[in-house]
Length: 111
Image (tube, rainbow, N blue to C red; front, side, top):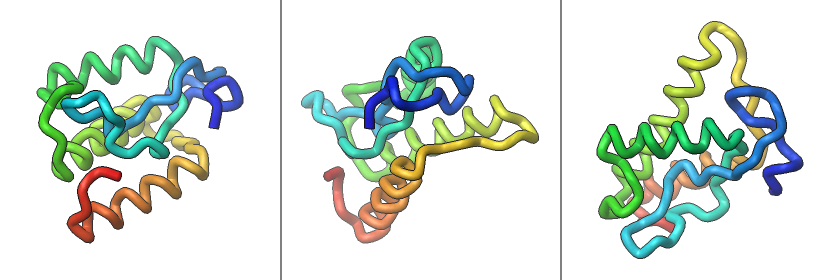
């Protein structure tokens, strides 16, 4: 997936970034490299700022709980942004989210 082929899930306009909603571990490696969601630049900045405020920022010790909290944070923000409307997500994000949830349920660490 490329950002410029997608629409920001918040604004519905062309995305500038592919956000990794489970983030990176303390070594800088993506916890779930294939799990990405397209965001406009400003929304990407806001998501990372909100992570830091919530104590979920990059560099936090990686765990399955952190992965779930970060993804939950994004989903709550999308729901609040869209209110009673619909959230449109790329099928690849939905698939990778499902796979990540299965790995967490099976007790597997980040991929």
